[in-house]
Length: 513
Image (cartoon, rainbow, N blue to C red; front, side):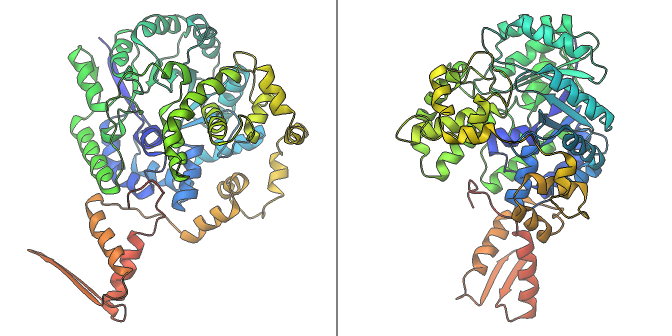
């Protein structure tokens, strides 16, 4: 039987799948970090460029600072970054030398493990990215085989890609990435041996979501077939549209005779903390999902599903979600069945939303859909529908995008900003709105501590502070007394300052408070 290691995805992919990528800020991560370091994870799936943008936009936090602080708090566990092609935070393709600077900064700030993923399985792009990461100091580089269902993506396709990746000296491991949770046990029993036979020296990992309930059992099948690293979520950040629960995965594997190298007590403490945090912040728990055959058609992964629902709710159109998902099927087919991994599910779902909300399909077409049809993202598995091509490329905006210059070089980008910026701040300003980066700088260093059990008291204090008619409030219970006086009292001013620090982060729209 196999000795199994776990990669924890709670902070990055679990958060993205269940909490819209906005559920965890820096102090919330740091509070549990020392416990995570003791669990014995093979790595922590910690951050992506999307999450770096979320830190800036929603929390006014410096994502580079978050990486540095987390690195110090988990010195024994590698932090993982996942990227998709030559892209960082924005949707735009960047010059290779700009991406080289991105990877240099990630390594310098504390990331040591990198997932190399190309949404079109462009081998040349994957190998070029791996080479840059290695040259910039990446310790462990993992090539992604992104799983999807189509006539083109059979076992032989993935075996051939694994063989090509195995010939690169810059890749250390391979993983099967199943973002929509479509890998069934029967397919795993043919796919995994085919990849194992082709991958040569590279160990194999599995990353599969629970979106339609298949992944927990598939993980036991994968372990029997020799996969020795499985990706899991902890506590409320496992299950649902996230990845299998760490606790249940450990129990299942041990029941079947495998050994799992984790500290059970530390894993339970991490789970307890995340449960308290979820309750304090009004965030959902991952729940067991029923089998839903529609996912074999639209193939939308958990994170994008959650984000799409949140975007519709924000404009009071949440009731359109079922129609949008039906439209996703149609749009994906018309666009040549792209693999539904970033950025393609975002592109397909956005177009589907416009089609449903508008009076006519393709009356509104985002720039990224135009770029996709123009081939800027590579070649899909099937040709794009000819009528859709005509509708999209007939609009004046398509001509403007055709004439777009290539992405600016690193030197050209540098000239747009003051010369005294750090590399890290330069990269944020080159890819995000300037006012958002200004807000990060004005906010100062991130807080270091978070106590979910104190959240109700902090919320009470914040609400009371907004009521000008109250001059004095006393809360008492045995062994505890809290007195709030009007702002004219020095003691009250001191307390109000502390309360403001505790509640200063912006609250995303989906939060209950």
